[in-house]
Image (cartoon, protein in one colour):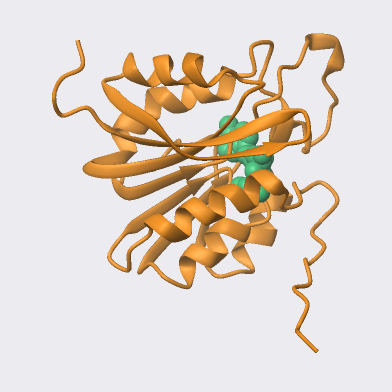
Length: 195
Ligand SMILES: C[S@@+](CC[C@H](N)C(=O)[O-])C[C@H]1O[C@@H](n2cnc3c(N)ncnc32)[C@H](O)[C@@H]1O
């Protein structure tokens, strides 16, 4: 009999790995190298950072949710509780982020830690916009970023945010998932100087 993969149960206030997690994990496994210094922003359960930790020599994860930080730290990577990458001055070869992306009106907000996993503000792009501000500082000049984006968030709108920061992005993977399509954007510094 084949061994079944058992998904561990995480704290109820921690985002459980879903289709978006596994699509991003697939892209990470194709991209990651032993020599990479890796950071996963918003690591949640730590599923992706934990798998990266089995391969790369240095893996850091961050999350704003203290319960997520505890889950992820149990899997081995260095975990820092912070807002995106605040307080981290290092540069990384591989930056990974599955951001909160659901368009959310003020009256739809729920006051708990899981809200941070889902709520992308009215446009769905609020956290992505903040991430685009810091990405050029934490991704080294030959670095790569893998970002999960949904059709609900607007892939072209997200790509425009990054091109405004002299970053080049392109879709490397996609998957239809119920009422949305999930995309993985690979983002690098635009060395040709995007006008
Ligand atoms: C969609 S979940 C993804 C979790 C995990 N990476 C995965 O793929 O299953 C988004 C995660 O980002 C975290 N997060 C949201 N805003 C954040 C911020 N400003 N700084 C750090 N983490 C944040 C949430 O707490 C949540 O764990």
